[in-house]
Image (cartoon, rainbow, N blue to C red; front, side, top):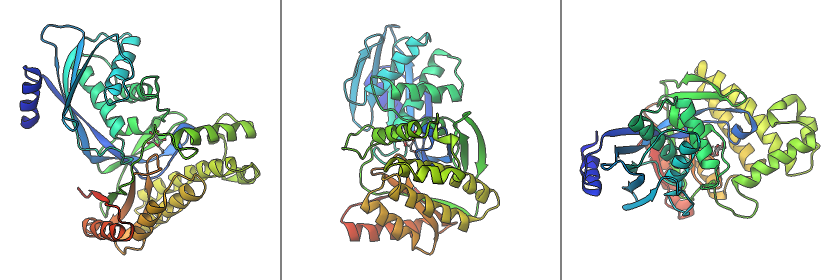
Length: 373
Ligand code: GLA
């Protein structure tokens, strides 16, 4: 267990921590906004992660006390009284409400949470928080829940009334199941997944644009919720159940839809095809091809899904023109957040620093190189 955190735990809760668990953040390599359309995705775990230390309550009551290291804030509530407070306590409340609803036997607990997955980076800080908490509660109360079930519970907690973000299942599955150095190729028609080792001849570069991302925010028509509705509307107009029912051969039908539905459906259908091609390219180590697919994916997110920002387009452009980089794209829910790039092995850090510096120089916004960490 992390000694420094143990000391903080003891001073916050006047008892020792019984258990420590972790959940990694994730970066999606390709397959954006395809998960809730029953499509394909390819995320992987990143080095940044959430850590949770947890103990049963000394007097076995129903109180939940949580201390967030990053917020330097301790909050509490009682099991059975969960309600939205529009702050970070919504996440644990959503989790314990759901577990009780599902009939899991839990009681109060003291928990400390610490995470270096940056908020608003599009790297699943929320999913890592939910997954680490579910893992901690599972361990503490000996609940029989698989890692896939943890992911599904985390998604339901995020979708529910307390948090109210209607996200797909990719982030929670990645945070619960993915490992560093290996991508998780998931088919959301079945939630079956395959582990795809990432070639040792390349490394990832992740740069936070400095523009905050949020799945829950509401900014006119440019947000996560609106994009989901537009996909549903496209299905309705096409008389299909899900966009996964369409293939590249259906593009003529898709193009005939009114805008923006044609654009949204075209992104999803072409993105699904790109995920399959990326998996194939990774398997044969064709990194140049992966780079091209990253570029096509970014263009599709920018032009058809309208989920990028001018500054992020610039960041991708600067990265793409760097000779150490095979390709770069916006990653995650969009409307802010990070880019992911594939670099020649050993060249990621220097390239990343150079890209970040030029971006800062040209936009006046301070980016952050997150990987290599
Ligand atoms: C967010 C959501 C995911 C997924 C991505 C976009 O990260 O949480 O479910 O939809 O956006 O690919």
